[in-house]
Image 1: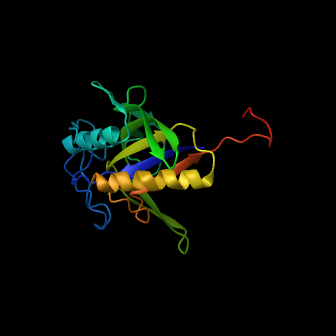
Image 2: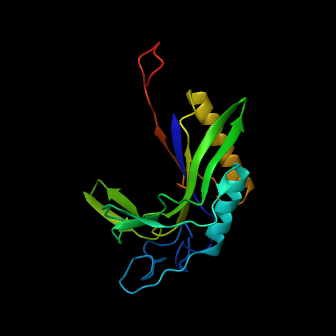
Image 3: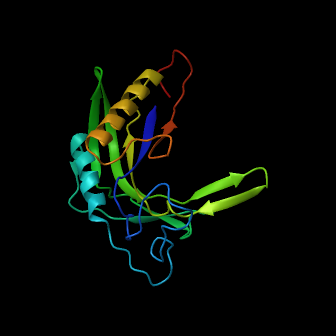
Length: 197
């Protein structure tokens, strides 16, 4: 099992503009031409975003790159007004780390910065989908583990440790109910008794 953990950072403003990251604001009030991707706008990187990713990188024994590059991840989401997500690909900020948990080590492949998409709200009673772009451009980090985890219990311990770290470092509130901390699992399977995946 390898896990991809997204943590929403506790910055007061978005990744590349001054719009607020306040969670409970009325829909589509924390937006501007920069986070909506209007032509001619000039994004400016949030300094706290860089500081926060370096904190988690050091706490997870990662190598911190002196040079890092952003990339465009192109795909269509109804709540992604730019048509791409600013992320990192081949040169993330943090690489080759690890976390020790209960007698085993989980390798960290990379930790990179990216921006969140908006939020689609599906109203099944009226068969409508509404789009709230307040979350668009909110800074995230993605912590990608090596496929070192073998059991659900180990996955739980690893996630609990990461949650403790981001809360202790004061970079994320760890609130899974509001989506501040989310996890995708990549699971490889094999026939019982075989060694090869």
